[in-house]
Image (tube, rainbow, N blue to C red; front, side, top):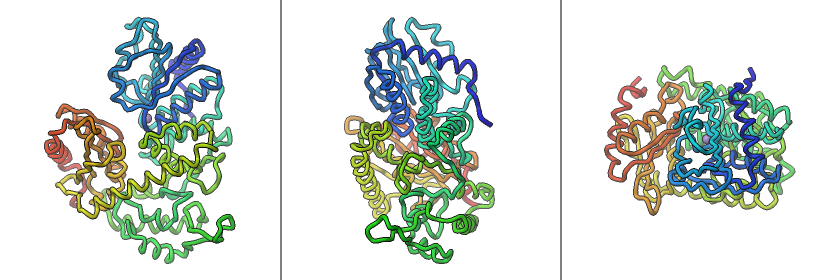
Length: 480
Ligand SMILES: [Mn+2]
């Protein structure tokens, strides 16, 4: 079913459009992740097209605590609902928030302030901000108000980057409406397919070796993945006239339906062999999901597949290269594509180096209900990515927790948690648990069920680990 906007939310969009049209000096703040950069790109495209002067800044949440409001109109996207962003608002300030995170202020808050304050948040309208729409989706709906339906594909990218489809493997709610717009514009196609990362660009035998929701014989073992392909009669390399050698490694996107079916049933069989029976019903969801292709992008490139594209955007923002990400999203490819390739390559190198040292130095430490490693020295904005990638070296039945210091200036600890999707399907919401534990220690936290994080004071590490371990007692399928 295609969802339409609740009337009171639709009205807010009309007001937001007027607010923008009546302002000349505009500032956008957006978040440092794929959803945030997508939001920022949509907003800046709108402003460019209607000829408005604006500045855009991609920021971490801590910047918002003491923000000076200096522009006629300040727009916050993918953030703002949970922060005191209007603390220094002046009488003639105008503030627009487009955020899907839990709102701090009530819906009638604008009545109590002297300045113009408009907050669009799906949670005010009984729409789930973690599965049905994200920051980029909210910004796209604003673009749609201006008639720019051609930006719908960025809304789809944002939803994938924000992992809005994790629970069911599909886009739903308003996300589905946005997807429908993108399909009608001829910009996106979706298909149900094997869910392996790197569909367009990664050699299949490599993609398979990264399977980490459950530790399989093929996990981190390319000899086994090559043997598996052989067993299924899937060639490891295929002919390709467009490359100098005339052939290249087979990718998932090269497989025909029969090959995909064979691989799917083999994966399901392998996983079923390894898991406690209580997880069995979730196995198909680990292997099959909806995939999204951007039809304006060249086949076989990493911009073609939504999850590969979102990884590239994350690589940019985590390396302070948001300008490159914005250019890519705004369509200025000529100058930005080479830069993007280099950023992505350096990023992968940085990840691989750190993963290697965690493995070589046996840094993963087991507790009864969790496992962790000391990530000191790893940049705090990538420690979560690394935690997710080393999950396959530990025990998939427990969450992987990593910590590192927030920054050179701030000695507090950034904590990241990643876990197998099976744990989330089984009903554990780590984002809520980590928030509770961090708050009890004078910190803060939150996030998704499979990927979340926290900030805690620097001397609270052991207490944090012990509390998490206690909280998880009896919640994991460790025995059966
Ligand atoms: Mn978001």
